[in-house]
Length: 63
Image (cartoon, rainbow, N blue to C red):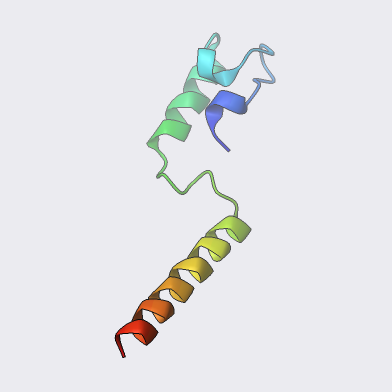
């Protein structure tokens, strides 16, 4: 999940606005994580399956 959709439990404002120290800390933590950190495990598995299928299709086309 991206931080622009999160609501802070401390100040009830969007985390992306960074109104309180808790918001700012969570915003920094989420920005430091990698690009795939926001994806759930099922989305990562689906992405991996699509990549494997595409690779298999390319290998079949060249053979």
